[in-house]
Length: 274
Image 1 (cartoon, helix red, strand yellow):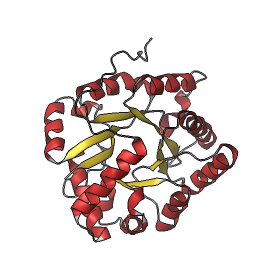
Image 2: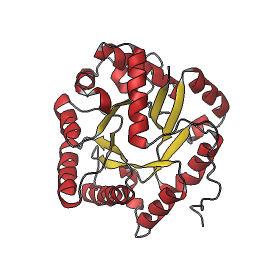
Image 3: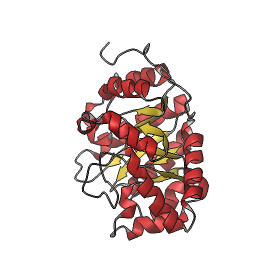
């Protein structure tokens, strides 16, 4: 039963002592591909090394909204170069808006728009982080669509209401659910799961964060995406095999994934330190 974890951060230090064992567990759980998100471009060398090490791993390049102050006049060119350099780059992000305790909403919006423009230029999907910002996110995207045309992408680790979910479905986005959907107090998110069309549904771990029940409180890892799949399948009243097939096909469609038969080398790509 193939699964795709569409949002991981296995470059984090917490995985360094048991990365090979973590890989063995995700393969045993049926995870056939992963999409590694990027918090800031300085991570790319490490993420690229992981993509070379694990042929099933693809990745994104971008700048997280909580790091918006790190955007410089050179960041656009850097992200463009990194994205063009390696065929295993399948998205721009993660980017978006995070207004939880934020003091720089305008800066975040500007940085997000710049990355939308990169995604549009390269015809790559965006991985969108949206926390406490659904309405301004919707407005910004609608205005960008009107000026420049639409960009494909996914609302990752989605935590919105059914009404907010429909906003982003109407804009053409995929919706990805994380371990939060397994939490007892996540009734609104669980209601959102039911309304997403089968061809727009994705699953993820966002590891090492947000481990699902029954692993809540522990370090999250890609193998645990199976628990997310089981919960989402239950909520949608479909067999988990059907859910796995649907979400795997959707990930392949959105990110242009090729289920690997061997390694794809990116060793010739230039370093972020060059």
